[in-house]
Image (cartoon, rainbow, N blue to C red; front, side):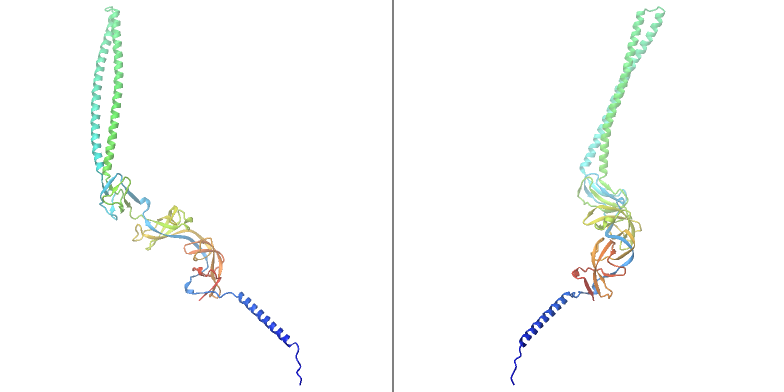
Length: 420
């Protein structure tokens, strides 16, 4: 037999190889594209490590909370200040002691003031003696002037009678007209002298009163200074001024204090109010008159906001709350408390427990559980008003939805997680 060569076989083989290669490449490309379209597997999270809350509908009480202390109200506190300079000689009463209005809290020593009191006393005695001498001298001068005026009056009356007598005699022709005229001139001259002397007496009387009043004013001034020094000397024994409990005495024996220096703090027992520190971000809606509750850890006392500090200090605003209930046993100044202030009440709103980093009027991403209860997907939720532990839901969730409220910032790059 003769072999017959097959023509075109090699060419067909190469074509089949090329087609196979193309098919393999197309399959690889399709597989790669398909894999790229697949989502990565969601991370797993232990269910026990997260807090899950439920969206509910109902009223929302908007509250703010802050720590604080019990303090006496301003009207029941008296700061005892020094009315004069001195050195603390003795502190007879210790803090915590019940005191009366006249209880001596601190005894001061001021030798210079004692010397000034003695000098003022001696000066007052000197001025009083001079005033008495002045009165005696002026009285003697007044008596001399009155005696002189009495003599002038007697002369005037005598010459007046003589002139009247001469007038009668002249009518009878017993004396001449010249003698009558002379006697009348003498009487008129005596009358003028008498009138002038009366005016002089009046002027001297007024001058005497003015001199005495001026001297008495000087004596009164020195007496007032002496009395002031005596009161200052008496005030070296610093008294409580009110009935209460001595809370503190911020001085020590031997310490030098100036006028106005604080020597003690006395508070009326049984009168306390809460001084809360509210975060400045939450204090914008706090106003006077809002109701509050004060937790003393031994009972809850109702109260009312009576003052809001206009300035923030170290990130907080001081809010004073007047207590309206009976104080529990053990309530005392500087006792640590927690206060809750009710800002508003919203009826029939969607709400849930406050999530981590959930601020008022903000939009956050939060994981909502799916129907299977194992997977959770991220949704955008718009929040409204916030309270201490609750927040209003404006959009993004429905009633009955379950959400993860814990901090999930570690999964920010994922839109889905799985609960194990």
